[in-house]
Image (cartoon, rainbow, N blue to C red; front, side, top):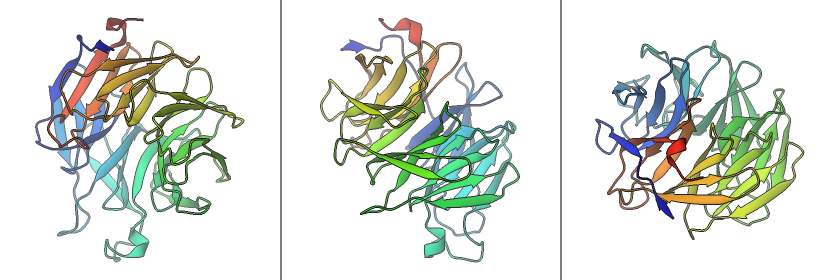
Length: 324
């Protein structure tokens, strides 16, 4: 396994912030969520970080819990507020707007407020789509109009987690508890595809350069590939119990993913060939990852799951610096 000798790691100003998700903004900067410190932050290509606190709608409410983040068609960055049960967006200038998923007069602990939004993606219809761990998929227009679609629960609650737009004009998401990969049309029709490996805990998902969807299996220790028609193949990872997390399509035509417990960055070709690269800092717990057109990978080091001893950084890596 090759070490990442050309990796640049940038420390987040807020300690123990638990960075979770990262996305490229239309302004050319990278934007990421800080799940534990209730902030959304911007990092420039040169590495300058600015943090923006996400305000609670009401005083004395619980943490916001920013989770997934994605660039919207309106030029803003849209993010899920997992604990506060809201969807928000932040402009390039740092102004934040929020949209509750329950009536503002309902306490945050009520059943109506417990949908737990997590993953966020821009849809092919000009709207933002998001997952809700309580078993729903949400759609929000740039103006803030929300529609929710229930996911068929099966034997247990499905826990929709990561979400992405596919090349087929549909939206795809993972069911972390339901052990399915799902496809939802822009009108809300859902089709589920079972993962062969039981209890695999599908986690991240990305649209590949081959027109297929690629996903990580956190407990299954595999990378999966599913065609728009639903044909599914799994590829075992060399490192055992590596806990693959985030995944993204790189500018080199491959898929890149993070391994939280393995403390590695991984690469898989469209043909299924896998390479792993070890992170220099122990227990950095890499999670969310994205790529930029100029050939860089950016990912967060959350510092969770391994004793919280490392991490709390944003990492940048030139794909060209790695052996092919």
